[in-house]
Every structure is written in C-alpha cells, then in structure tokens.
Length: 362
Image (cartoon, rainbow, N blue to C red):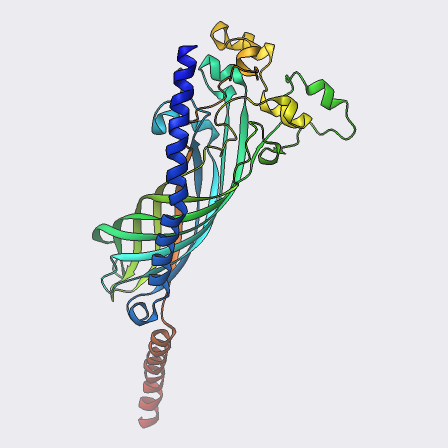
C-alpha cells in the first residue's frame, strides 16, 4: 500500500511539472517559428544572398515509446526500438541559403511519417502478455534552421566536382497524428463483435476518440526536430551547384505520450463504448500462457476499481525519428541562365559561318 502511494505521489509530481512545462511550450515554439519566418521572408537581406532549391525525401521511420524491444522493461533511447517495425517516410521540401558563404540555410518540409509497434515483437513477458499494438500515419509540417559544420571538395571528373558537407539542424514542427489498432482475434470480446452485421476483422480503429485510457488527448501537437545530415553536392568548375544528395538522421522531441495511445493506467471499460473497451485491454489467456508465468494473469492487464493497474509509462513522453535519403535541385536565377544561353548561341553562330566565308573567297 505504501509503495502504491509513493508511486501515485511521484506520478502526480511529474504531472504537475509536465503541465507547467507544456503550458509554456507553445509560447516558446511560436517564438521560434516567428523568428524563423522573419528570416525566411526578409527580402532586404536574403534576396541578394542565396538561391532556392527544392527536393524529395524518402526513407524509414520509427519511434520510442511504451511499446519496445528487449528482455526487460523499457530501455533508454534507441535501445528500446523495434527495428522490425520501421515504416516508410517520405516528403518534399524547399530550402534557401541565408548568407553569401552558404553556411546557414532555412528549410521547410512537408512529410508523411508512419510509425508502428506491437507487444508481439518483444521478449519481455509482461509486455508480451499485455498484447497491445498500434500504427500511426502522421503528417508533419516543419520549419528548421541548418548550419554547415564541415565541408570538403572532391573532384569527380574533368567537368564536375562534388562538395561533401556535414550539416546540423534544429527547428519546430506541427504534427498531425492518428493512432489506430485492430481487434485481436484472441480478444475476449472478439466473438461478440464478429457476430455483428458488417464486421470487418481487418479494420483499423481510430483510438483517440475511443479514449481507451479515459483521457482526451490532442492529435495535433508541436514537436522539435533536430539532427545531422551528410550532403554531396554536384558542382561545376565555375562554382555553380546543380543538385545534391543527402543522408539525414533526424529525431523529434514531442510533448505527447499518446503517439501509441498508451500512457498510464487501464480505465473503466464501463465508461467506454464497446469497441473502445475491447481495444483498451487485449490480453487473453492464450497469449499469457505463451508468454510464461512472469506475464501475470488477466487481472494484471485490465481495470481494477480502487487499484490502478499500469498500462504504460506516464513519466516519459514519446519520441520518433527518421532516416532519409534526399535529392535536391538548385534553382538557378533566370537572368543568369538567359545571358549564358545567348552567349553560347552567338559563339555557335560564328563557328558555323566561318567555313562558308572561306569557301566564298576561294
């Protein structure tokens, strides 16, 4: 009893700190966004300093939360990743150079990022017995500041060079997410729903409106993206960049613990709609027997009145990250391109006329 009161007190203290931080968090993010937008739209300093470039990104994404890997409870940082649950991520971006030396850039991305997790992919018996899973197909709109940290030239051929650059970035993003789950065939309520008209066993249910933990949480949140990237930029001998390829490792800090719809305690199923109660606890005897004695009983994975049962870890928020390969194309100023084309055209015309003149003289 004393241990339970200690845990409850610790959780309450953490919740109070989180509320204070999260109340100030939007103001801090909005200040960062306004500063970045000011730099992005300042024609007096930017117009003469840099070029635009646009591009595409594709890669993989994963998350760190209440569903993880390993033989024990949740582990720190990437050691708790479920590598087999990596999902695709892709997006488009536009970027602009902020200074003549090209050290600073500002970039905006529109990305679709998928994450997923399943207790069936863990070796830790209590998590395996819990038998929860999810997927989350997210949309992210970000604005970030980039800084070149290291740069070195590389000659590839007679007419071209490449510039290798290591770049760091940090920014602010808005994320729209929607965790979903399916009804497990071993669920104790599966038979009840399977007899209903038009029941689809492959359906993915939106979890946020069902409030599987009795909590209404936001599906639109602010995140802080940061990371590093290695860039190989194609370059002519005249110093003009044409295109570039990059490898990027990015991490997003969030202020939400519900990317996986798992955070704290099992809620009273009597306060939920039927499908919400079924998805809140998917533990069943077959899974518990398979996981072993240390997985506990059904009561260890369901709501008990006056005795809160842990469903997740409310002390840590969720993270997600991406590993992306990007292709970017530099947009050259139209005026320079026109003058270069006219000059080349005149040279070609002179070369073509000279043989005709010599033949006319002779």
